[in-house]
Image (cartoon, rainbow, N blue to C red; front, side, top):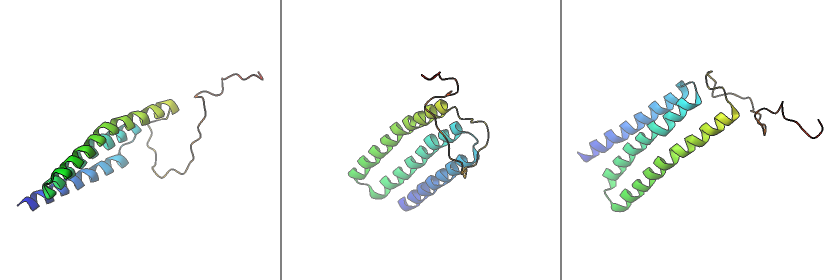
Length: 122
């Protein structure tokens, strides 16, 4: 009976991660994609960790699962915040649908508006 519950939890976890992957491709801007990555995949990992704990039923597996889940819960928002700040700093246009297979190399400058900066030669 426990094997059926574990199998269902693993299938639910895989389905959640599949839906998150489709959402990453389907959403049209960076912020919506970050939401999918930080929220939905955390829930998918949680269901997988519950299944692993039910399968092994050992204390060290439970402790490792708790550590893994807390690292994910604490670091996901931090990484999403850093990506959002860099996106805002680079002033990316998030409203247009961009291909994930874009072969253009982005160019970065030290200043947002380097046309109006004065140098010593001016």
